Image 1: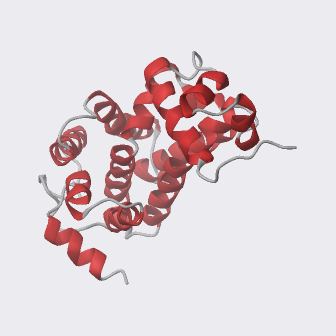
Image 2: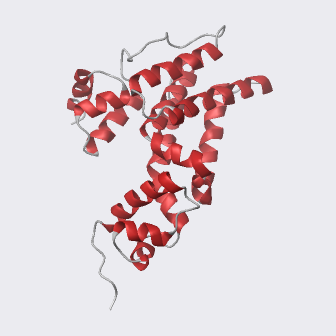
Image 3: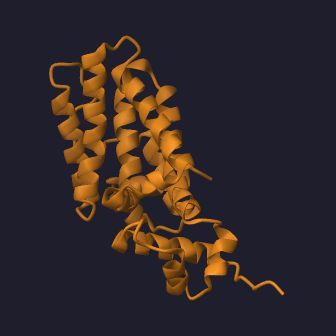
Length: 234
């Protein structure tokens, strides 16, 4: 007779794995230790995830979906807005998934899954091409890579800081890198209007059970702005 597996076991495994990977590192954590934290057998974990790399693949899936979606939105924007839409879109994805990014910094655990690594690599190359522009020379492509790197490192280092302050500071740093070139938008703290990426993020967080106050704090807008866009989504 096969072992009976409660319907919420998969979600509990992912939560436990995230905690263990964050505390101990991906490579130092065994499937057995994850099973013990959940309170199930190793067999029950392997029922849902044939290997440890499959766990990291599942943990990374929401990040990859959000990343690919934000780039698709940027590509569809007005050409003059593409670069800044990429910056804001990527930053909002990093902020939402900041704890997974911090986990990866510990021992590059996301690279353990070739599927995850390939999707992430392809998205970052796509982002670089959008930021640099179709006619970019090598120095411009390097500057684009520098700007994109500036988005993630501060999020990892200051993941527990007030998110609207962190968001504003990171974007200001990117603007300074591109000083002397046309800057799509002026420096600001809380965004004066919601970008398409922010609206999608708000609705996604709402669907996941976050309150309006939590959503406002995460994306760096007022609670009234959150209510306005959520009420218009139905």
